[in-house]
Amino acid sequence: MVQITKSLSFMASAACLSTMLFMSSCSKEDAVTPSPEATIASVQGVNLREYNPLISVQKIHPTIGQLGLGSLPSGYTLTGSNMTAGLSNATYLFGNSAQPWIPATNSLPDLLGQNGTFLTLGATKDNLSGVHVKIKNIFEGKTYKFTYYVSTMAVKYSSGPGQTPYASSFIFSYIAPVSGNNYSLSLAGKENQWIANSIELNGNSSTIGDLVIKLLGKNSNATSYGNIFIPVNAIQEVK
Image 1 (cartoon, rainbow, N blue to C red):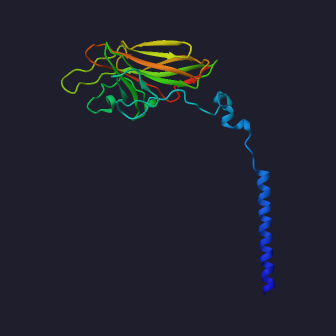
Image 2 (image 1 turned 135 degrees about the vertical axis):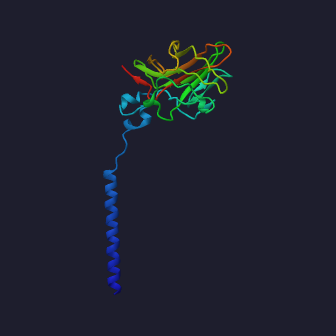
Image 3 (image 1 turned 120 degrees about the horizontal axis):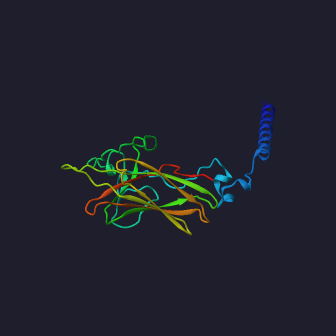
C-alpha cells in the first residue's frame, strides 16, 4: 500500500510539472509585446484623428452643466468681474422658477433635449458681459467649421406687466496665437428665436486658440439677456 501511494504521488507531481511547463511555453509563444508604434506616448503632438480616424477629440466644451446664476460650463471663465452669467434652460432664466422666459418662437429639441442647458449672459448698454474658453486640437493646414446657436429672450417681471429688454448683439472673437478675428452677430429683428450661425476656423502653428464671447445690451438701466448654445462636436474639420 505504501508503494502504491508513493507511485501515485509521483505520477501526480509529474503531471503537474508537465502542465506548468506547457503553460509556460504557451505564455512565451502567445504573449504579444505592444509595438512601440502603437503606444499613446509615441503619438503625442500628432493629430490623433489622422493617426486613428475612429478617435474623436473634443475641441470645445459644450454649454452643459448645473443650472444657476454663476454656474458656468467646464472650462469657461468670465472676462471680467461683476458680470451676470450662468446656465439656463428653455423654461427659466438660470433655472429659477420665479424668472420664466417668454418662450422662444422656435426651439432646439433635438440638440437641447428636455432638460438641456445653455449659457446665458446678462448685459446693459454700458456694461458688457463675456466669457472666455479654449479651443483645442485644431491643427495647422486644416480648416474647421464651428456651429453654434444664439438667442435673446425676455423674462417676465414677477410683479406687474412688462418684461426685460432684448439684447443688441453678440461678438465672437477667435484669438489664435498669431492673429485674431472678430465676428459680430446682430440680434435686431431676431428677438425670441434661436439663430444658427457658423464660423470658419483655420488651424495654425499652435493646437490651442482662445474664444471670447461678449454680449451687448440695449438699455442702460435694465439687464438684457442673451443665450449661447454650443453642442457636443460643435467644431468639425471640413478640409
